[in-house]
Length: 596
Ligand SMILES: Nc1ncnc2c1ncn2[C@@H]1O[C@H](COP(=O)(O)OP(=O)(O)OP(=O)(O)O)[C@@H](O)[C@H]1O
Image (cartoon, rainbow, N blue to C red; front, side, top):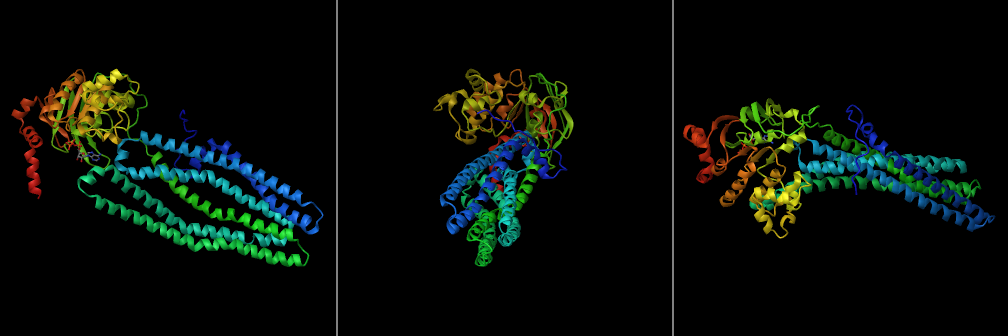
């Protein structure tokens, strides 16, 4: 089925109250909503007539025996049927409105999330985000759709009251007397429950985060045999949820009997007053029976009044959290008049300083020029800013000061989609989707032919192992590609980047998880793939450095030396020291010994 675009957007004016901001969404579906409300109004009018018919039926056909009983029974059955049909339609339309609005809101939120930059995702927890995007959206939807419906049901109480007044004024007042009390009690109960239900939501989100991390991090958990510790953390979080639910149950069970029994008090009052009046001949038996029905019929809307207030509070808080996401502007955006077209790949960093949103300074005045088609290996101690340099080329983040240009144009003046199309990135931990190998490689060019996909895989040294998989290129990799080895995942990621044929290629540690023999094969492929591209390789191994025309050494966020590997090795002691630290396994072992 074709995807329907959201019918409306949330009003961007932050000064407006939440409901006003959500109003375009309600307006977009007003046809369906108003139809459903009208139908439910008509249904309730019909419903209100039934006790009245019972009254007349009893009085005339049973007591006075001046009319035929079957006439009234027939009418009641007919009205009940009509009410059934009307209620069916009203409910169907209301639920449709609800889910259509939920669909819109979901799409608005997801589309916005997809546009947000890396700095946003650095800040938020994915578990919390998942909970926000499900329960908060649901809370807003419920209020927007069911709120008006509850209001309609409450107005019908007024209609019924007028009808009762027309039958018997004192008895009508007696029948209605408990309703405001029920309303007030309902609201008071909800007010007492609200903070607890709020706590429940927060604790459920917290639990979701723990579960999410447990599942995402299951390999680390198992590697450290920390299952017990994780289960205890989960149990502690689950216990907090349970405690909150128990508080909720305690408050509800205190109030519910009161709320349940008030209508019975109403029934007793109607019987008492109505009975006395009937004995004196001031009213009929039918009236007492009818008013009994009214008392029972009118009580639920008054009870729901409290629920509506709570739904409103919850929706308002949920909407505020959703708006917080929607009001977050991506700090990496398209320029007003983006420059388009293919670049040659002349890459230049001039005085680039960069700090992550949390304040960590990663680059401190980096200068670097990579000529079109040149391959530069970036070497440096851990934390020196190598990966950051790669991320800035594709504008995952924008520089704090200084500039990055391609072919002399600041990358912030290029269309973002064009830039990302032309800068291929292979991250150190590539992410694969639960799709076939073909679809994973073709992610950047979904229409690519099998031949193109295979050519890219060959260049990345992936073709061989892919052919050996049970379904070849159609093999679906498990979630995140965990059914493949680390080296295999990296080769798929390299193929994915190459398929787009980007003039600029950034390989971050791309071959670190591949064994030496395989690496040689990949390097042969990579040499061909890199030909004619500007390539920046974050290199950890000597062998990777061998692929480069030139090596630059980074230290504390800037380039401190640049030249051919042999020259640097001979003339730059810091370079030799970094390589020694990275390529001597004994170092790691020593450090391990020392830390014991
Ligand atoms: N998303 C982030 N948010 C905040 N700080 C970050 C983030 N990513 C990296 N950093 C910090 O920025 C600095 C540079 O990190 P970067 O990953 O660029 O170093 P690197 O040279 O690639 O290190 P390695 O060789 O260990 O991968 C480090 O101090 C790091 O802690």
